[in-house]
Length: 212
Image (tube, rainbow, N blue to C red; front, side, top):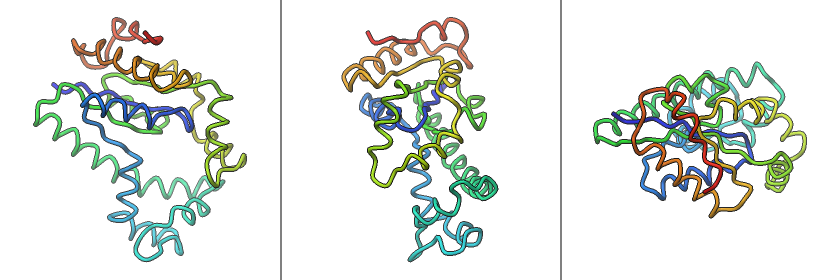
């Protein structure tokens, strides 16, 4: 049986870096963000062009134009999510089917809005990547093209970090550097080596690494 670990975390918490640490350890991983990038060049182009005229350039979704079309517009964002989310789920399901067919003991699905969309129900355990709020803000505002307004709009769509941590079986705190994060990932893999039953349980929730 393939144990499915859902990896999530708010913007600027170090989720992508943590995902890369699992890949480094040889764990198969499906990246929802990468799937969206592929869809913006493939199956999502036509429906997005129809729903948001002017956001496709030379057959590819222009992320800046699309972002401007939905920023601060909840109804527009819902229309976009109705297009993208089912397509990403199809790719995720195909990935997990391959993992099961190949006999993988563990697979990670990296989903930014896992908890916001109720996605924990399709995971055996949830890992939340976290960092102090001031670290998060500094990281995000240092990104090219990011503004305080955009950051606030993104945060408004995301479950607060404290609440996410309450849903977690495991935590990775990325504020202490890459080596510390890597140690935490290895601790998680050790804790999962016995692969407890589906949905974890008290014995799994007690194994939240604090950086060995």
